[in-house]
Amino acid sequence: MSRGRYSLSRTGDVLDARRENGLNIEVTDSFTGVARPVKTLSGGELFLASLSLALGLSDVVQAYAGGIRLDTILVDEGFGTLDSEALDMAIRTLTDLQKGGRLVGIISHVSELRERISARLEVIPGQRGSTTVFHV
Image (tube, rainbow, N blue to C red; front, side, top):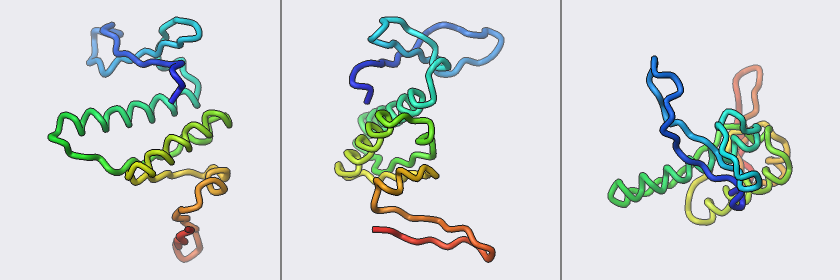
């Protein structure tokens, strides 16, 4: 998704031996050749890294679970942190997933998504509860 610029790798470094460690990941930027902690990523970079990890995990689960296919991906926000180029890439990736037979759900308040994604379920709050409208 980053056109080969970033790669993620797991580090074996123990950050704090007094507590449990999770999945310590660092990102290597091919422009600089330097590996850095994930916490240094911008909002847009973090969104794309998270989406990449989710898609990769889906493929791993499918490969190791006897061919069980994960057909649905749900993305909850993050689009507001993307610059226009990263937003284009994210939408293109999600559209390709949808064309490949996966159901892609996006929860967002970003108005540009409404303009670019025609099929959507809109939740409209009201005084007597919310209503929904499906746009095709």
